[in-house]
Image (tube, helix red, strand yellow):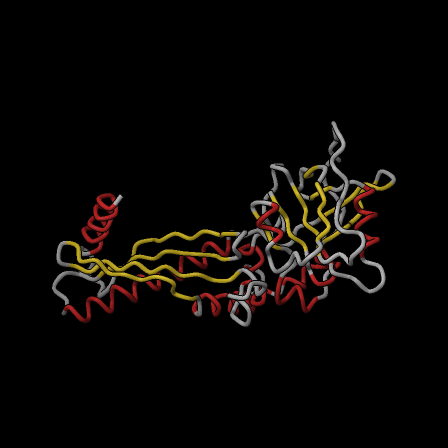
Length: 295
């Protein structure tokens, strides 16, 4: 792996040293870790041979930082708000949001940086990280994607209506379970490996009297919560979901019946009724966005 990395760096330098620019970058890459709640990017930069060592080092680092920021922005633009809308598509129509997102990208945390000398030229690597939301202790009070984007404005278009046919079910799933002697603290939705694209604004529905009815979505969450924390956390396992800040001490655990063709999560009518029952007596945890979805 080390040899491959060094060969890659050598290729970067050979390609970029030919340029006349005082510093050069190569396209880095980014990724979204929905479970940890971070967007991460890696950027690379170098400087032409012959530049003063101190200046070359600074230029290579700055070029790598710019490249990491670019990769971070490109990754953000590819995130889906819902199944039909990407952030990029929305930003094309909203200059103010684009400015805010560019601002949080510039303020992203540098979690790792190093420089290697390859063929006499510095090759810098910078790893950056940005919070998806402000739910975790690490992200509290820091610039996050959801706060920059203003997700609450999508409430009017986010409902339970499905554009495709309703799926059929071959066998019943386990009913919702939690400690009924105590107030519920959140909902954990188990998808059990069903195909679902992780989005910022998921929709949970139930079929009642032959019609798709909204159980959970951005319309059911307080706008100030949407703007600061978003409406969902994702986990890769039930164990991981249970220890998130969102779950609390007594989550209602529901197995989804299906995921519709338009990426809506469907739960059984009896589970939807149980969920509504837990919200009585002022315990509206859904309004606080306390939902975790497990693949």
